[in-house]
Length: 262
Image (cartoon, rainbow, N blue to C red; front, side):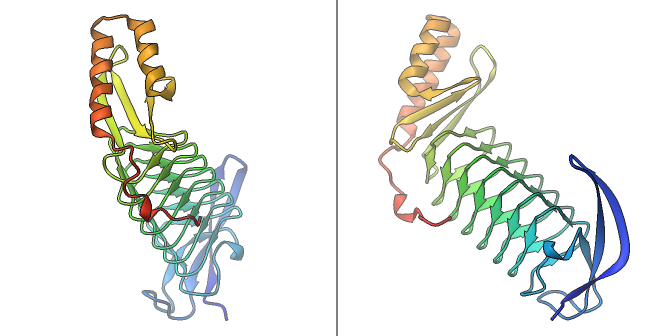
């Protein structure tokens, strides 16, 4: 049984693939939190929003391309879901958030504010991505983890458990962050007057992201020595590294919450 219809009102938007015509929807039956006759958001075609379950698109939200919203998922405010992205189960995408590429947001996960989730990223469990955060590549954010502020999580990074990645953190590569003591961002620091992120990796070691440098702690220290010798920048970087070694717990505490699905 159909749960919505097109109102006949359309609008045209510009995308990288050209112009797309979106259609406003209207509920034709009561749904969870939605009454029959209530106007919804904008979709390109019926394949974008399942007629099964209580999934809904409302406000100025837009769903287009091959994107799918189903289950009991909600996409609202000014959010966009497009390309091959999927939002399902009880997930929420709202405010000005974008979910695109081959990304998946599901379970009870939330993506909101100005956050972007794209590439092959997966957000699930009770995870939240918000603020101006970016999650992309093959990254996974799940359990009760939060990514927010201006943080980036990318590559093959896994952020889970009760971890929080925030501020100007750059957690990438093979990061394995599952509690609050698995990542440290220091800055502005050094010759670039920028932020340096230290994080636990899959080998239970510490990986460093500093400007264009991405590698193990020992390699970072050697690169600092070659570039700066013993000047004030080298001393600042070494102090930051010492703090990271004291702060970051590499013993794997919190891994019991790690999920294999997704």
